[in-house]
Length: 283
Image (cartoon, rainbow, N blue to C red):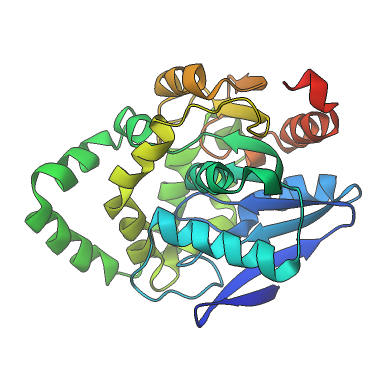
């Protein structure tokens, strides 16, 4: 993996392929590994940068700074340092929120967005883990004590398998993706649980995505939702789409939160088709 320095911290990323630049951002708790199957299918046409976000994978885990603003700043510094122009950004969950927040500030630098299962305050609240958001808002003192305790834990690969299984739809369970050692190992990595909890602690700032209403000139958006997603609510996703006005929206009926692993051929085809479509058809 390659890396770059962000405020004295190492940010790792997988760099493959040649062609138009595409940045790929993962969901909380995972790493660049979720994009591996899709990247393998796209590398012949695009230059791909699949990140390990701050606090995850092989990137630095400082124990703080896991805020949406900080992730956007990280992306800003990377794009600037590489001299990239007109990048496409593909994200999942928090990665989609980072992509949208970055684009809202730098729309002239973004060609298009492909947003899988976007994380917002509303989409998370509508998911199965929504009560944790209620706890964070209503009982912040107790909440932080729990976070500190959990943040010190190093989970086993067995727990990682359970965490991965929870994210899958019927398709992913049939493929036994919860037995993928690289996916499950993310949760056993020291500091990774603390990073995920840090992201959740900043969740109220993800409401900026709920309130985003792209106007004319905003780069075209494609959304992809797994209809069996337990982490973020597809029903809330439909409401979100009514304000984001994506040029293309896809709903995968047998997929959950990791649809890029559950249906890599289809997701790669959607991404490629959207990025290759003439701009006038995406308006």
